[in-house]
Figure 1 (cartoon, helix red, strand yellow):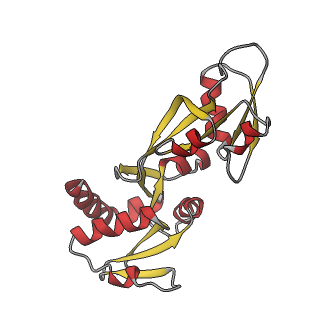
Figure 2 (tube, helix red, strand yellow):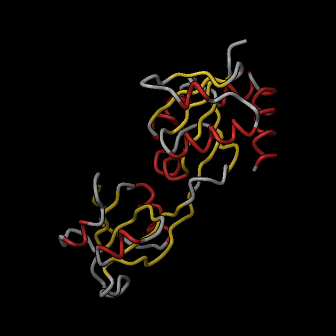
Figure 3 (cartoon, helix red, strand yellow):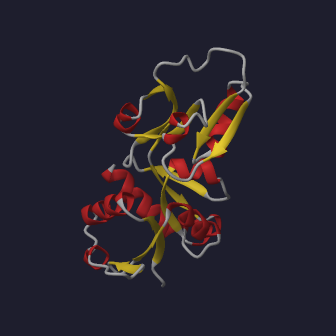
Length: 207
């Protein structure tokens, strides 16, 4: 029987998931000393694939990985056809709308311009408010956009808010909370139901 293959988002979500595996009594030493390898065993029954967040979804959708651990931010922005099985409760932060401290964001009648790395999340949020906005996609430090008068506000991931403060911005409204989620390939959920459910049970007990 080939091992269950799980795509992990590299970095913090990867190490938090490995902590869960440790608590389950699985051997994560190979992954923790991985060098440059990207496909590694965890015990005999699991194989992990280390990937960027958006690629975790791609690998799970296409069935080359049975499961994935990825942030709700990536899931909401990218969408896709897979099952979201469990909120793992770590990697917590939030999407927030932030704007310059000295300006009343919702004041005035002009169409607002919003800068974000997450145009889909931003569009959905303002659609719920029935507000017309212009969205500019930024890849780097979104906080720069209001400073350069490119945007009236930003929608971004906020953990502590210190970066916003340092750049004269403040949270206007919380858009949605974010945490790591366990997702599954739709076919794998049928074909490897017993194995996936057993793993899910163990995760739920630990959480």
